[in-house]
Image 1 (cartoon, rainbow, N blue to C red):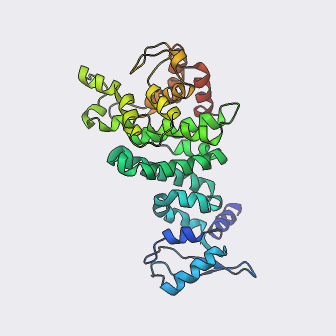
Image 2 (image 1 turned 90 degrees about the vertical axis):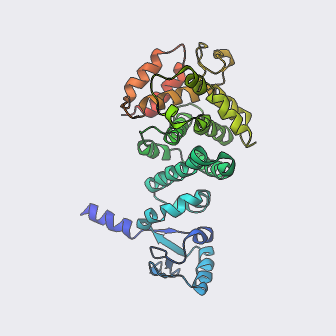
Image 3 (image 1 turned 60 degrees about the vertical axis):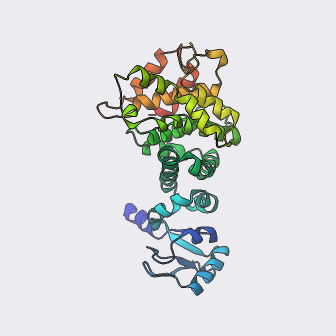
Length: 330
């Protein structure tokens, strides 16, 4: 009986929308109803018909009522809105993220980030970086304010390897380390600088041929050299955007360096590495080990963590411990 009541309550729950959100909704074929709240009795009345165009006079009236906080959609229609919302994630976050149920919001954040990341990893970083930057800044500010969303996002990550899926896993898991596994929460600017480094450390790989990226073993010497140069390629292409901080760019350059000097591209040691560079390196290695690839099963979390702990000359044990706290939870 309680489950039925809860289901009915969710079905009858409403999320207010702002004028900015109304502007991004399709007006010719909106697949659900908008509702107006009667301010005197709190009742909701449908004011549009699913699939029917909204005429100009109604658009104006609805816009005005949005400004007064009287226009709503049902919680159960938020999933239908997702393809629309993820194209306008900063607007949705700024205006109505407080009204969206947390599980729906976590899913929306991941889908919006994935769409934006795909455009720079597989299309053009030059043409799409501004949109990606706006999206990541908006998501970063929200996660800094509501870090528990990360616990919902981590299980939603796609475990199959691709550059985009790896970028999302690096970013979300690294964000959880920063906000949940350290004694002091970083300020929002430091946190967002770290997010950019975590999401973009492999952007230099996107220029490599698909047949090289798909190989696990038997790389030629030339292919090995090209892969080992990708941190430099990442920094070079990102420097053209003039958008990333020196802190982010340095961490991206360092994410394959190791404390004992065995890393690449420069082979520098612990004293020359930034903390963020070490974090990006540890998270990137963990994600690479736990993602599935053609012909290779994903490694269990506990196995990957044991390997990282065993390589204590390469990885900072404190960072691995922080990584364990967010990836291996009871």
